[in-house]
Image (cartoon, rainbow, N blue to C red; front, side):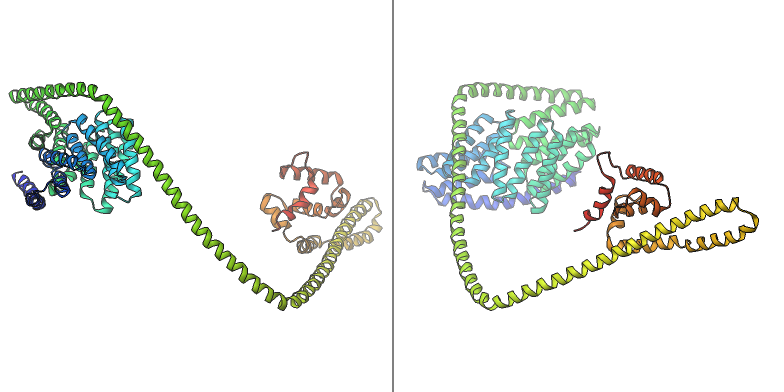
Length: 564
């Protein structure tokens, strides 16, 4: 355990050394530049920015000096940056009213400077304070506007931070699915751009979320991932919260030894960054922990410290509420001014976009008109030249095309007439065969009544009649082939639409296609007209036709509906 903390300490130390080199350079530049000018303001603001995450008090000192000097110089960019820095520092320390005042001032300055990126930055920071004040609708609106701006400006890191904060907003409202969606989105983009701070924040938020959902193994896994990244980058603010989260998870898992170690380390870091709220929460958790391990005196001590700090925070909150009430009108004026300026900025941006589109449209339109005029002129020249060359050939081609069409039409008409004659011939053949069968039937009846010496002669006659009609199935196949040459798509379309039709029903459909009446169909099929009526009735039901539909018209229209 000692080795682990030693390793973390060395990582933090190495990172602080890298930051220290930057800070030392800035301090050197500040010492070298004694002039009260904008350069000194920029150095002060940069120092305030560098101390944001690990020494809020030092950050506040540099930013306050930068603000005063900027005001004396009327340096609006410096005023805006210093106000934003002070807003964020006060947010980290729980001084929400003071932080909100600074951030609204920053917003007003950035809007007057038309600094789109920093307007979005300040809006995102302002939303953080609205979250702490439970003004969720305002917070979400500010977050959303900032998020959209970061997308338009292609600022993935700012997008990641804002998405994490929106997730925290939803988590605070116990909208866990929405929170999870934003955390995962933040983590995915952090991985794609290799942004460790965003990744660590997403991991920590996921750990906190899964802890609230009771999924302690997942909560522990994500929190440990966050600690690993934060330790390497010396993110003291993040580490303090992560140790607290780990301590509460271990406590819920009844691993009181690890819970104690993480809560103690979290308390040390919370004291280092001056976060009274986090210290209060850790005191409470430690008091509960010590009760569990029966260290009642220590538990009482932590509970007393919790009570003292909580009362202090409540008194401070009461004082802030009084100040907030006294300053509310002023803050509301600033909020209204921010809203007004934001609306004006939005209108100006829209007007600028419209003007830009109009300018581009006019340029494109002018170029398109020139191109069109050139194309028309070129086309006319080519057309006049080709018209002369092609006039005679077009007339000749037209004449030949007409003649070819007439020849094709004549040939098709002749083929159709021939096929129709063949179909008629086959139909008549069917009728004749059925008549022969009728004669056989009559002959059999007479044979039954005739004398014995006449029977052989009559039987031979009947055999000859039967022989002449035995090829009826082959005749049907030949008829079908001839029929399909004239009506190529008929049987295919019929089977696709009605796959359950029998062979006899297909025959009936073919006769209906030839527009045969009841008697003709009966002769071809070798059944009575009444049987044809019954077959037609059954076919109508199978085709699902109502009384208002004509069966023959429906059958005759089937082939036409399949034509391209």
